[in-house]
Amino acid sequence: MARPFQRTRAGRAVVVIVVLAALGLTLAIPMREWLAQRAEIAALSEEVGAAQERVEALEREAADWEDPAYVVAQARSRLHFVFPGEIGYVVLGDDDRPIDPVAEDSDPSVAWYSRLWASTREADAAP
Image (cartoon, rainbow, N blue to C red; front, side, top):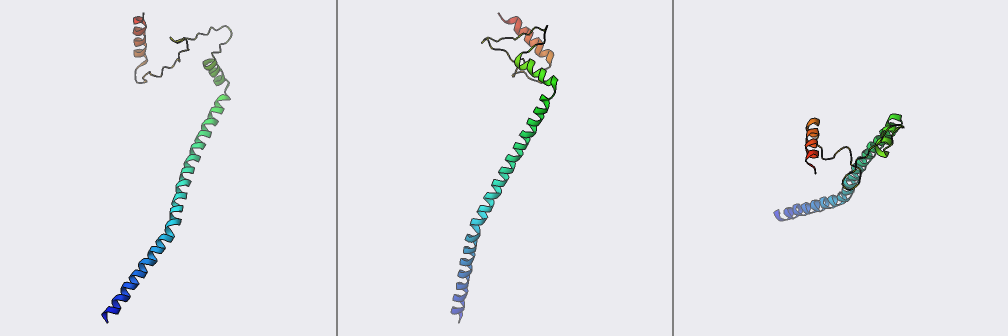
């Protein structure tokens, strides 16, 4: 009598395992799709946030252009406009191109007077 009981128990275990495997396979594909969609939604939300920040920056820039003083400052710096009676100067580099007044290699942690003294010594040493 022990044998038929063991076969029935083993058969039930096999059936339970097969049912659980089928259930797992049935749920795996929708779960994978759901996770992929959640990742895509997160990426698109981040993209929307970046686009909104860009729109806000452009709105601030457009508001700046409404100020006449800002327009004058931009015309003077970008286009080298001068008011009547003023004399405009453009400093040219070795390649006959205008030198940017704000040097990219200037270290903001160095005091302005140290940079002034260094540029004076550099100009004095030039041939």
